[in-house]
Length: 222
Image (cartoon, rainbow, N blue to C red; front, top):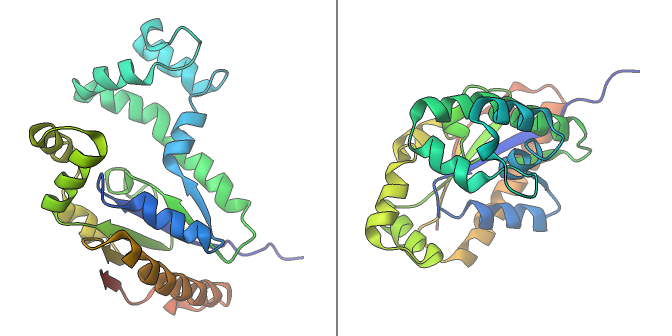
């Protein structure tokens, strides 16, 4: 008996306050499984997990909160101030996040699934095994305004957060599909519905061994 072919896999990414979560919710509403790298990053460092022990060995017991969980806020401050510390932490966490996501994909029974990966560009080509890269894009001015409104921060702090991320051009260069999310949120419905139909078609082509499953880019302006 032959093994079941792997499902079609879409990696979803975008900058902070670009609308990734809103897009992910719409895929879920259509019955598509969405597996979140942020959820994975929390689960792989939970108490009893090997990654937590490695982090404590690398950063000391001060990285541990009073309840025995990882003190993410304190650790974030430390790695934000040191590129070497950030690389050390990433070397521990990122491979395990990738394993977590691969395990979810392997267990999938639907024709395709979505992986929400905020740091897709930063960790590429570790995710070169996905079939499609979907970027939610937004002009930086709108991104800054949304970030200020969402987090209650000023323009200067929002600017620092945007500057700490990979450039917009790098995300777009990696994209197979782009949603230009500069308009109202409800305009996402049509874009996600169109992509859903396209991904179902591509998934069927992949199952049939048709190489055109990966052809042609899509761009949706809202």
